Image (cartoon, rainbow, N blue to C red):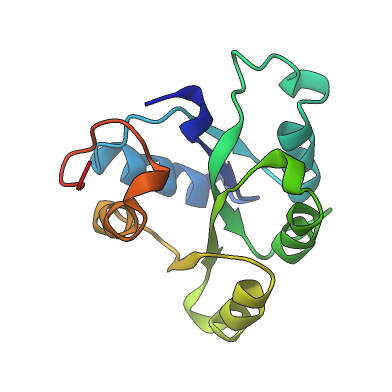
Length: 146
């Protein structure tokens, strides 16, 4: 696993972020994971600005869990921003949504999302993502094809 396989969770709910962090850990994912609470912070992270300027502490995120509904800048705006920044490299974007917001998933796919998870997420959900996108995670992940 390399630093280029860092995971970024973008979610304004501390509880939802903690559930996702636990699911990632329980799935045996060794990738470094960082959490930001809105789309504007995510962009600062991607650009290595401000507190995210130390690339050793905040390595480039290749995997992004993106909440669609957030204040300041929502997940759709982040997807639009990423689409215009090819110099940042390819990212696996998994959108996070509630069961009542599934109609928004199609819109997210059209904007470049690769997959989605319904909140709350669990370790089985994460393991299924590893199986679906094995080349994105890097390293030796239990139950993956790597």
